[in-house]
Image (cartoon, rainbow, N blue to C red; front, side, top):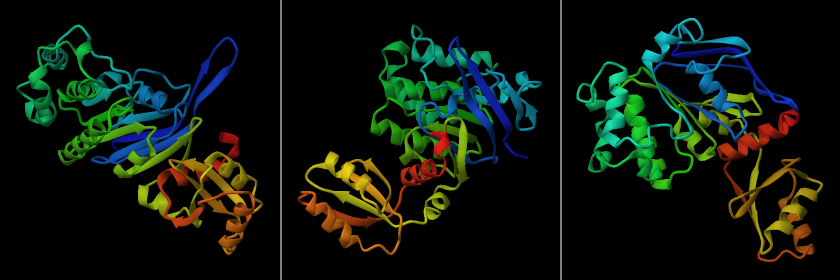
Amino acid sequence: MKAITVNNIVKTYTTKKETILAVDDVSFSVEEGEIFGLIGPDGAGKTSIFRILTTLLLADSGSANILGFDVVKNFKEIRDIIGYMPGRFSLYQDLTVEENLEFFATIFNTTIEENYNLVADIYKQLEPFKTRRAGKLSGGMKQKLALSCALIHKPKILFLDEPTTGVDPVSRKELWEMLKRLKAQGITILVSTPYMDEAKLCDRIALMQKGKILQIDTPQNVVNEFGKKLYAVRSENMFPLLMDLREFPQTENCFAFGDKHHLTLKEETFDISELEKHLITRGHSNLTIKKIEPEIEDCFMQLMKAHPNDE
């Protein structure tokens, strides 16, 4: 049995000025015991999908089920077997760390002691602050408390909506290490993130943009299908360099990537020294052009180029 099955889900939101198509005929499935990532920028439709799957929102059309339970007809059963950590911190700010965890355990007719082994790795870091109010915690500690509360009833499936947004790099790394340990305990995890570098930490990913899924596969297979030579280009003046690269007739795609520009060309056999000569004549100094291996973000940008109507 699939842990999660989504079939042709559509969701729109209507305002006074317009109707927004948030989820556009989305279908995917998640295997039991895997970490599946919805990867995409803000506005890609990730949160709407999460709210539909956690029975908090009704889709306009399509269907979805969790471990065989329909998200509309069997919402009560689903709420007993899932854990949900929304993108915005939503615990009780005036309750202490310990009080929040006890509250969520009580809702599911369990106790902290009964399932302590499941949250022990996380909660041990919180115990020195267990009498501190949740609203006074740092971003990383809030994240750990929210995850503990989502796990305290021993869910079969864990939904984490952008759990690392707004937290420091160390806390991001710690969270992904926790997710690996939870997976080892048989918990299925659906996680969303706008950070492309986190995609490679999932077993499979769905790259999303404007409510559509552009590709579903393992991170390695996504990279393997890039199919183009990729170059990293630098010079003394990076913004003029970006403009000149984009205006170059052989350029297929070029975008800023950290302290470099990533470039693909229309012709694979093009002599890269010709590009170098062109840029030098444009006044670029300390120029470097280096062939590199693609990353998930490069693949996402390539898919965006292939689906211009989704931009």
